[in-house]
Image (tube, rainbow, N blue to C red; front, side):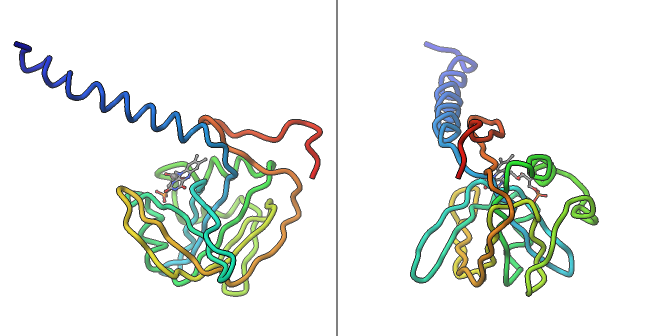
Length: 179
Ligand SMILES: Cc1cc2nc3c(=O)[nH]c(=O)nc-3n(C[C@H](O)[C@H](O)[C@H](O)COP(=O)(O)O)c2cc1C
């Protein structure tokens, strides 16, 4: 008969293994890196996000998955519009900054080159593209919310090379991978 400690370990070990396997599997899926931004209560809110996807072409819809425990969750939940900056390779430091938990929100854009969409949302300068959206639907999914946005405007950025994320590291395309 296993004692209580063994029984508990026996129950927990497979869960940890399963979580690691899940993280490994999804971390193997190479993605681009974006910064999602909005204005809530008169303040800029910005967060690095890679769980961003195109959803529909007609009408144009995209989604971002936002951790319910991120401060950005409350912000995007109350903001009528939000923007996605598709980062270029040179924006790596900015991606790191907007993924730093506990950073001071006031002035967080001060040292980051950015401009504003016509509706006033901040978007970064070092991008391949920027999109602005109005929230169409927000769905609870586990510890995240899936926020689906109707794209209201799109702009090309000045960058040429994407910032990528694969297996917990920022990456760039190999030299010579020209568009
Ligand atoms: C490359 C990368 C991608 C990320 N993608 C997401 C994402 O899609 N959704 C999310 O909720 N958090 C994501 N995060 C984590 C947030 O950026 C991080 O938790 C951030 O500190 C949240 O800030 P806040 O609590 O100030 O809102 C990502 C982090 C990194 C480094």
